[in-house]
Image (cartoon, rainbow, N blue to C red; front, side, top):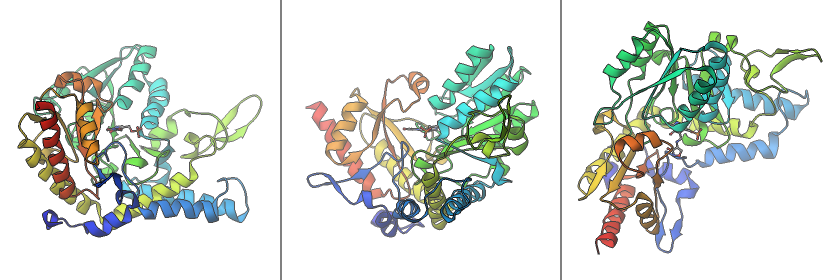
Length: 416
Ligand code: 7TS
């Protein structure tokens, strides 16, 4: 592993933690997994924590007074504490378990949005957003007569800050919701500054942490975001669970999202009262094993150290950019390496991204091809689809070498 001499991570040890990576996916072709932005792989520590929970500790939470129910409740709530400290929230009550980042946006749109926005109000998003941070607001806008404004991007794939400042001057903006790190361009957006600007005009700020929380140290107090959504499955944790962070006063004032068990204090046939935070937003039997897995994923990332993870991914991504820039006919989208993180989306001449992904797969290389749930962004880039390589703690420069070699092979197939 000559090329990561400077990585602060012990890649050999880390790769041994991820059993799925150690396999051939085609005869003689080892798996080169470069699709972590869609969903990361899980270390043994996470898989074991979830198995252990099912083998020794499963029961429903917040219900029984028997040993197993207490154990399950303890495991579920301990994971919440871990998440709270991981993102530096002030209180565990600010950590709402949801299914994924998508549900986080839907929850805020359907509760805070419905309760607080009226016709004529404005919401500011950006053209680089994932569909999950566009569609819930469009549904709300249609219902309420709200206007959505989209911050455009500069030619090198950064948010146009002058346009943002201009939008804020209307005096009607009530919410800004913008991604921290782009899943296509890799752009790291200046969330702290943008949140401060929103607050200066009395608007709330929500950040999409889905591609940030797994890769960099995200401190919600330092960023001063009002809401943030992210998914466990992109940060070495399981599918089926994510987190909505919200400032306590805002969450307290919001109506509930779903009704049912656990989210109530008292139910009568005439009406009901809501439970305290965070339970007000957690109706029904939750994803308990998944919370345990999320807690184990947080432990795993903390053991590696978020600074080390970022430094390692920078090394791999910079190496990937350098090598991809050399490939004739290949276009990489997004800004220079000092303003981006983790992903490299590209097109190769006029070869369709799905054909590239197919040819790469024959070499064992897993990349995603398509619009990556960012159709508006792809329209602006002027392409229907891109192929995307994305990196995580277990990615190596050798993986990049296999990718680039496979791309050269794909070129040959199409220029024959
Ligand atoms: N926000 C960003 C920035 C994302 O990248 C994704 C998923 C989501 C939100 C939604 O996450 P979910 O867990 O609720 O689905 N992004 C991708 C992707 O880039 N490829 O597959 C999923």
